[in-house]
Image (cartoon, rainbow, N blue to C red):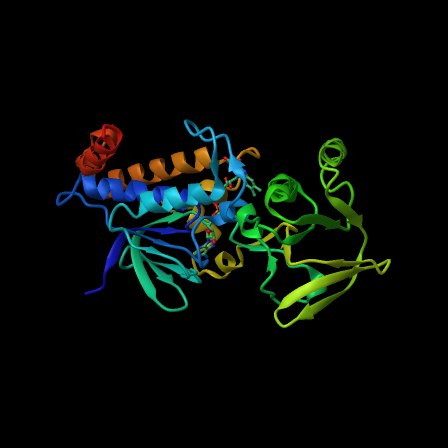
Length: 333
Ligand SMILES: Cc1cc2nc3c(=O)[nH]c(=O)nc-3n(C[C@H](O)[C@H](O)[C@H](O)COP(=O)(O)OP(=O)(O)OC[C@H]3O[C@@H](n4cnc5c(N)ncnc54)[C@H](O)[C@@H]3O)c2cc1C
């Protein structure tokens, strides 16, 4: 018999992962009575969405969490979502969705599988996020060229070159100065952030060498780039390169879906959450993405199981008993 999920979350960024946790929370709370049978489909190789692009940056504005790195946040969100048996699938790009009017459910296609679902939670942000590549390297990949902001510890005693403008590199650089042997910054654009911030940064970190020039060529040995030659023929030799040129997003796949934009807007069994919501007055933060997940799941439960009891206070949920016990055992040791 065809397995028809009650809800399918498309997108495994913060919004989708937290919605999966909420869906699992209902399933567990209502176990045996009203279990919400859901799944999450993520097109990329990893969860995290845009947060994966600033994994080493410290986030300060999540309520009750004064600081947490993007990487730790993704890890925590994934662990929370995986607390239940909700299938969380990576490398599962949704290429088509169609509403089967006769059956009253959706058909969801991915390159390898077809799924069915009564409701949809669309948490696709701006689409699958890919770092912009340095044109100089002509789409070739190299072992020592890294496109995500990186953990400074991975660069201990290495000669590091930073390539690109922007705040990601500016935040990373001071930490690299602690671990790396040397840090050189190459950019074709000045100021690399706004003028005042750049001035303050240059004054604070005179140990960093800056070059603002077009790139002429690069030299490689096996799968490693060993140096870059600048337009004025200065040759910069290094062990590791961190490139940060921003990201491209693609929602291309949604344009190719049979499910139309009007259906997404009008059908009562589709919820759009997080960054995929088109108009948020410019404010689309992690906290709002989390609330969207709660609202969507609560409304789905109300729609599919009108007699279900809402688990108003999460901490009362019996599924957390073992976890709570383990927590106090650890603290009171
Ligand atoms: C540099 C930067 C710094 C930021 N700093 C902060 C901050 O300090 N505080 C804060 O609150 N917010 C911050 N934000 C915003 C925050 O990252 C977003 O609000 C959040 O990522 C939105 O989550 P989301 O899940 O809605 O979308 P996304 O993070 O974009 O995730 C969408 C997911 O859907 C997947 N997907 C897309 N299409 C498909 C498909 N067809 N099939 C399957 N999967 C698909 C993508 O691969 C992706 O994993 C920052 C954003 C940036 C870019």
